[in-house]
Image (cartoon, one colour):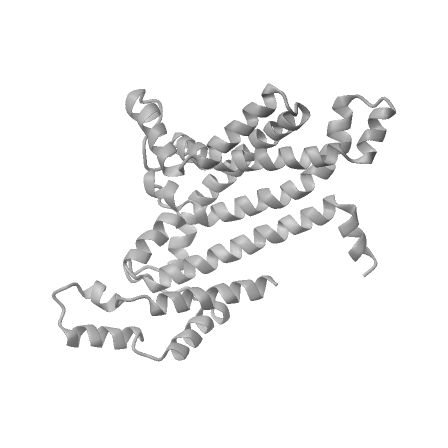
Length: 301
């Protein structure tokens, strides 16, 4: 199914950029260019050809020849620029999901095992606040406090690991709140199961009941959520990269959209779709490995 997903995304993003108002040739030549010059450059770039002709050439170049095109802005190969920027986006996404899991899952466990107590209410309120906070606002507050007032961390750019601290934290807050809330719901649902009641009736300690009986089953839906959150982060760090001026894929595509840089936008979306599909494939394999019921469906086939 990954092939169909990526192909569908490629056709969709090509169509969107094709029907977006504006002419890249006009942007490249500037406002002083004559209509004849714009028409000549459009013909040279193949922008005056019919929709199906351009679509066929794009799909052939991308999937049959592995050519992602050349950026209109930088005149460099889009594949090269994406490979230079992808590691930065990957760092933010990977550490964000790591912090989300390390903080969010224990938060949900504590809330579920102390249902109706102050720990539970604190976690619920904290999750609501975390989900409601705008990411860009939190990022700006952290920049003002940690960078401007106390000068503990750099405010923007890349260089050392310190440049990624604030972007990763600000990018993790919403994920922590969502995973914490979901983990609480999943754990509460499993705690009410008959086999958990049986384990407690046999005298199994609360610690062993939670971590040996409850968590293996409660983590199954969380695996999908964490994988989806991580995959989305690969293409969803646009605001974070824009605020902190991190030259990742998100910022690259934002600039490309404003300049109608068709090859950069189309190829960037396709690369993100491939990464997203691959991550979700890995999540499905992990899901099948963790859940014996799914594994049993395919062992005999």
